[in-house]
Image 1: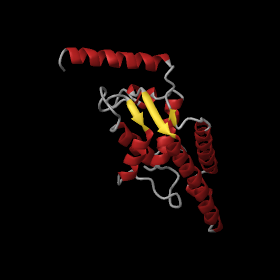
Image 2 (image 1 turned 90 degrees about the vertical axis):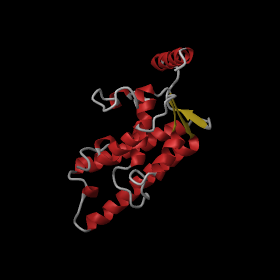
Image 3 (image 1 turned 135 degrees about the horizontal axis):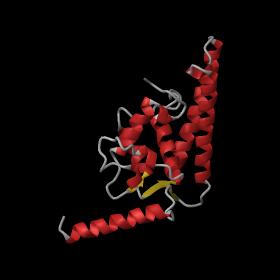
Length: 195
């Protein structure tokens, strides 16, 4: 089907990347951005293409959207109740999502450069009589560019931190602290029962 909207979450490539990431969620709930990027790079299906040849939706775009869902505390909708495995591989079970500034910068630059190259390529297509960067409607072409610019801007905001490592889940949120406390209590009980 390809894509049905401007976000990576509205594309087959983006949803493939999200499912790839879901299958790699750590049991301890501690997610690391560098590990995800390296796994995506090694995967033949989800490896990010070179920015010069990247299309409008990539695994890196999906990863950036996923990062911002964590920052915004909006991951619950990613765990659809109809999922194939309700007990495991839930994004809402992630209690920590850390990212080095270097990796956030790499994702930001990848998106920025992709936007630049797609716009440049669209300009040459216009000379050939094709328009809107391959989109069916101008509003989607404009919307995608705005979405990419917004992702870059939000990542720039994360990079304003002087810390070498950024926590993408604000730990002071009561629901995450409660989840972490429940997880610790469950592991303690399992250890006591020898499980």
